[in-house]
Length: 460
Ligand code: PHE
Image (tube, rainbow, N blue to C red; front, side, top):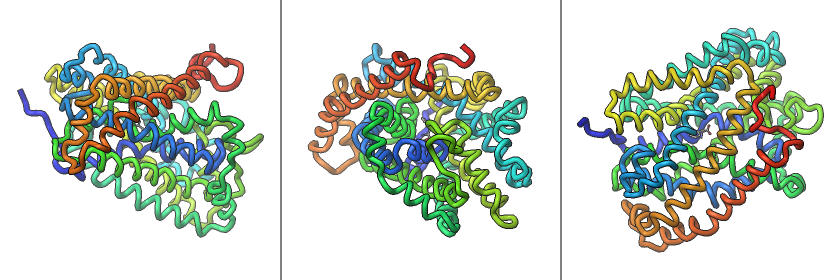
């Protein structure tokens, strides 16, 4: 049997995991979720969710992955609990599902890079998204191209593919976003954006807590890449001398920082162009529709002088593309590693074949954004919280002391912090995630008259 790969360096693992975490979730979803759910008050709820559920759950997935050193489904067998293997299976299925529409959004991003670089998008800023990018065979073809790049990197393996790619990608994302944030700061009129973004609106949060809390928790978990078997898989390529708590913290802090930074780019940019967010009749109302960031940013850039619009637009969507690819490869890897580990299939053809199947699953989303929103809803409100709940139960109540041992490996600390972590998983984290799952289910299944319902497929 071929020996299983590992990360070449500790930094390689951290960057790959940050690459997975930082993605469309941070740049496409985060600014608008924040803007429409009470500005920085949402930011606070989100940060609490990262701390209370996100980081403990992330460490739970790390523990499972590193202890078992094998893909997310087999991991449960290897840990001697085959009756829990279905948790890994739902996670892997969730990755597969999520990648199908994630890649469609990636295709739109490719289209916008081209649109800005060539300047064509500037002729129809409001309609380029609906009339050109998100429709027809073009959208399908670019979704295919995005999948091809994703599968190409995964085919090269852990060290020569994922680790090498993310080593360049993650620093580039940060540098580009910093540059863009500084640029947005220099635009006249952007001040109102900071005021909006950074002044908390607690009233909105309190009034709408039944939707804001699950939205913030969903955003925190999705953005940390927990709940899809991805972090179990990435940690399975680790050696025992890494400190999981230190790495987890680095990853979580970097991820929230990039989300916050993306807000510092997008929101001031919109305000500088006089575009308001949220509320009746504004460009971006509701919970951040699929096209919001595309239409919003494009409209905001149109009036920039000279070539500025083209350059800034291409750089912005270029950054989004890098972030999207460094995440999509992790979603595909979660599935590929299962087939490679369990059936000894060769990596490259497996990545290519799976990429093809994911591509087909994404075709409806490429043809109609209503399908995409539906797929996203199932992914973030159903797959994700359910898997996180099961992982928390498994690590907290089933692995217990074994999990504490594993978390301690590679750290110089004693058992105090790992024990605090274990007890928080068993109590606070479990309760919090139960509330989130409950609210999501209530929203999805029990209040069908009140708004967007993912569970009812489009057209029915
Ligand atoms: N965290 C990624 C993002 O924010 C999405 C993702 C979720 C990637 C789950 C992998 C696994 O875009």
